[in-house]
Image (cartoon, rainbow, N blue to C red):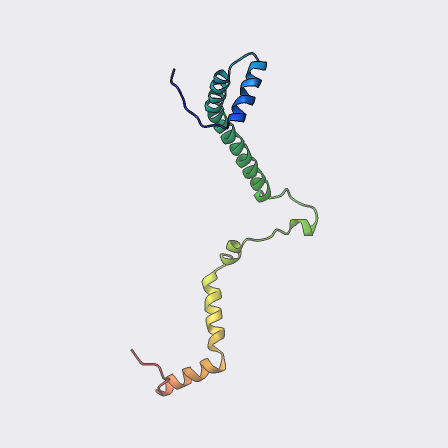
Length: 130
């Protein structure tokens, strides 16, 4: 067995010795018990913390899955409407057709018409030709 030197307040040591004597043991035995519990408790405590964290994570995942799961077929019209995700909105239909329609709509603006007319007439628009 090794010896350990620890700096502790004198009054604390006196009170700890008195309590150890009341319990029929020594202060050294109490320090050994504490250290043994500290070492074992840290390993058990870590395992318990991991188990609790895993349980919380699984519970959160189940709750998220329940929210994301499609609902059972509803009987009312309002219950059947489901909030669409942004991805669903973006990829709905042919998104390239929408961008072509937007481009042609912007081409019908007065400024776009003026630029097209100037280009056909061969006039410079201020941009360099490449």
